[in-house]
Length: 469
Image (cartoon, rainbow, N blue to C red):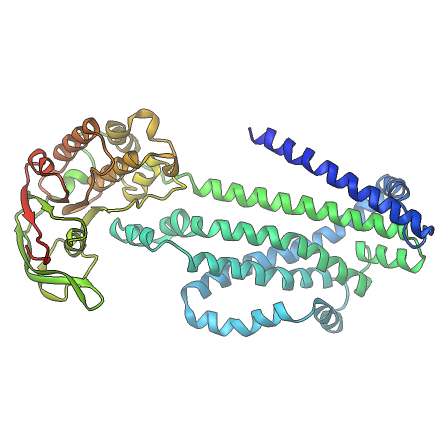
């Protein structure tokens, strides 16, 4: 299908290309002077002759090496600088004047400055660096600024830190911005690099050949080198995008080594950390900003206890669950909660670029792969495990998050409307799965259906219209 789409795109551009060739030929005929504007036929034969000469490829390769060196140095440096600026405000402020100067000053000014300081040999590499750096830097900073805070909170809850968090969550959110920066900067660096070679008359370069063609009034040769630059720029861009896409695809596969053999019923976080203390809230009031959503809530859940929180929509069920999960501080009262709480959030908190299986593995890296898969298959079936999260239905996403919360190493499990979007059969299967795997941990669930409390063998805690329990 991708191949067919590619062919359609190629065929769509052919009429446009033919139109501009006709316009070119008409303009050449009107001027009547090949020395001013040779026609496309003459340029074609000139270029064909150049492509038959070994020297053309040597010169092109020399320019490519210099420009690629500048591009690579700029890309790596800009990614690192963008990471630092994205997370450290002082770095962003300190680098702002330099980035602004690199963007605002004409490329010609930089070319002259480099020629004065370092000479013509590597001027194209330096100019490529100067042109590419701000584009990639801003792409990286923009990616960090637009990261999903909900995914960051999910990562905190499931203790996803270090390189796992960077590779599978942070970097993947930056990849679209990096890809856009690559696409924008690839052509720019070739244009600027060639201009630097023309002005600096760099030996054995495309720029030098263009300068000589201008000097000897060989306009057909000049245009042929221009076409070679266009082709090289397009190929360069496509190769960089392929590398970028391959890197993104690699990050989409969770590859941490793991133990491979264990019993699905006797391994994993679901039995490793039983609740050892009461969850207790005394006269708790909490909310957002200065406004309380819940007021004077007091509740106690013993080890192994199950509690269903009920009430109208918007009454404060999610707020209470956030307090229990340690995600929201109370304005008033005292809270005693476990150190580790796994959560099924109210909204989807799966990484859309990872499969259902990889989303769970990311939260339980030390659990055997076959155990994770066997648990997922109980709720998603064999075919659902390897589907990307953004391809799952709403109900399948909920079931995937239930498995993740149940397998995570925790003292208690908090679930915010975990059965939303599930039909009756899948709801019954999910309830059975929860009861089979909760062990001695406390289970706290918000729901609108009293039947859920019965099925989960849970006590019921109602929140009234005033946010009181």
